[in-house]
Image 1 (tube, rainbow, N blue to C red):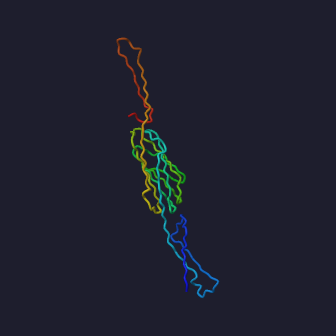
Image 2 (image 1 turned 120 degrees about the vertical axis):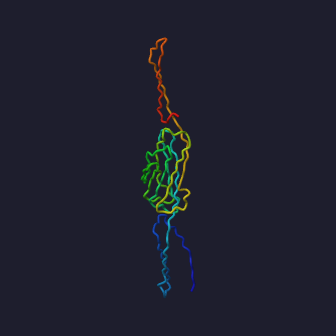
Image 3 (image 1 turned 90 degrees about the horizontal axis):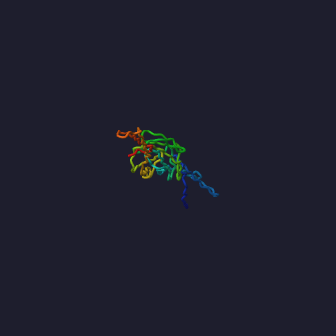
Length: 212
């Protein structure tokens, strides 16, 4: 009539997606068992998924009015579960920036107005990072020097995220201007003593920024 018990701890793979895990235990002994029908027990355990996605956005170029600039968007999964696809990365461009391109292995990117969207159809494994997305923008030539804030966000359409606080990241950088001004001056001479003379003065700006 004795009883003994123990606890078995298992590691659940981060990529498990089934809703129920069935686990069977069996006991046996060289001693004859008069009731063998109770020598097995089956447990059906429910499962959930939880993937803490994180995004970090970094300016990877200079920020000069009239020139293109690039940002890197790094998405990682802090676990404990894999983030099942589709994972969506969104980047809202601020005033003065316009979309040129967005690329990253495994990502499909496009834009609608100021909203840049990239989707990752495959899972992002727990403890790993997806390929970095590079976003190229054009900074308008009339942008004045000052702070420009750019915000990106990430989410999984399938896997719940336990920490929404790191799903959005804003980077603030200071823009500058460069204006290559030149001047030429010519006359309509030869001039005649006692008469008026005229000079033609031409000022040009080769950019890239407006001369403000």
